[in-house]
Image (cartoon, rainbow, N blue to C red; front, side, top):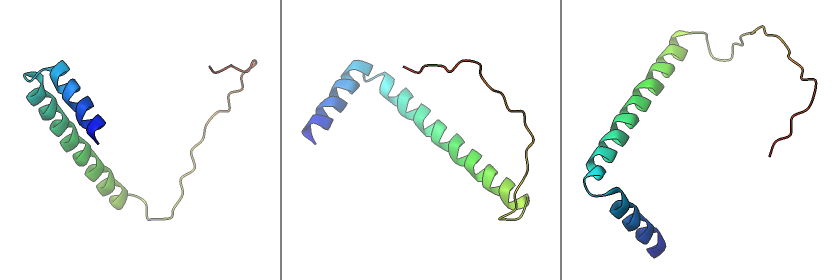
Length: 71
């Protein structure tokens, strides 16, 4: 627990006291936007198709000639 407090203190010092209100304001704004979007999606789902129904989406299968290596 003391390590976490020390890391938080260092972050606050690095960011500076002047940046902290702006940072919290941005985080609050992002949380409000996220909540409103989640609420809109729930309302859209409730007004849309009944629960348990499935939708078929057509598409195209794309194959690669050479496998890619991931690092």
